[in-house]
Picture 1 (spheres, one colour):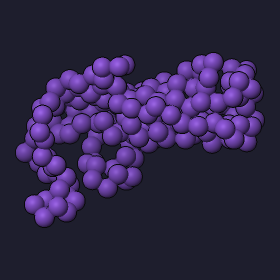
Picture 2 (cartoon, rainbow, N blue to C red):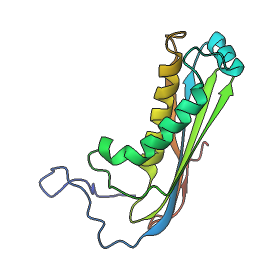
Picture 3 (cartoon, helix red, strand yellow):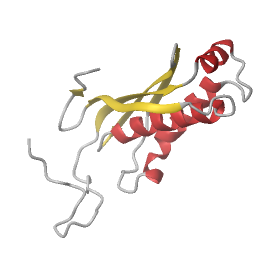
Length: 159
């Protein structure tokens, strides 16, 4: 499918797409990612003994805040109402899995908000554990699904 580059004008300069004529619709997007840590860090996370405090609580709040601040970080993102944001973090044997779902009833989607949410939640995890685990790293940030809008529902095939 050939899609024009809507964020470029006829001269090839960046522009913000005009969504004025679009009708608001209910939209959602879910993204995921993970922070890989050492086995020792996983043990600290499970015991709740990370010296900086409650890693998952801090990361959850950071992810929610990030969803709301996405247009401040991405120059061509629209300012939209983030009407719901859920950030789930799960401690695994290799680190922390993060999933964020963001919802709106607006003129454009929330894919960037969901991806930003996961990214910042992952950064918060790394920040909270870096004193004990310099090898902690972020991986596999990706969009899993989006719903609503003109293009309808899209789901990642490998999710």
